[in-house]
Amino acid sequence: MQLAPFFPVLYRILQPTFPNCLWSGNAHTKEIALTFDDGPHPVYTPQLLKVLDYYSIEASFFWLGACVHRYPTVAKSVYDCGHWIGLHGYDHRSFPLLTTAELQQSLESTQSAISTAIGINGANLRDVRPPNGLFTPQTLELLTKWQYRSVMWSVVPEDWVRPGINLVVQRVLEQVQNGSTIVLHDGACGGIDVAETTQILIPELLRRGYKFVTIDSFWRDRTSYLKP
Image (cartoon, rainbow, N blue to C red; front, top):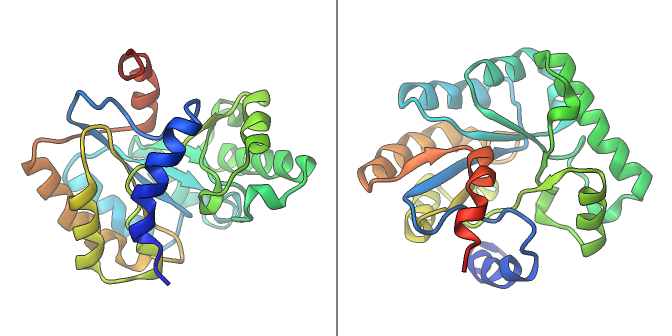
């Protein structure tokens, strides 16, 4: 069963319930964030980078430590293109299934892999998106305690089940609005279509007047859209 129809409902429930997470950006400006999970991938990520570079779009990538370890040169190419980097755990195990020690190790191992691959201080990588979007209040408490920033989503077209590129594009265009955080995948699941999907989405979203920003930009602007 495809879950795509339920994600907008979940967003409306979860966003006010867990306001310390970053779910979306400023609802008063036409800025959106294009984000990609589960990479880097040796084929799909370079294909995606060509599309992003063609349109001069800065995106945000949430990486699996195991993939960074396998494909460090791909990771370095993403970073060198100026994209924002976040953590997605080491091997895509859902955070609530991990012990506290395992969760901490997963994040630190991912930071270490990224640091080795792209040559930056891994401790500066603080944005975390939980695999499968699964978390508990305890998970969020631990992330805050360890000084990570929890990043979620607002538009999830469920591209990882490959429902068809046109349907993925349709879902995004129907749901996108000011401040949307769009989640696509450049990993083993869904990544085969990501470049073509993005190639269709970007010009249409630009035509609608949207500006693409990174997750870090959303954080920096957070005080504006949280004002009553």
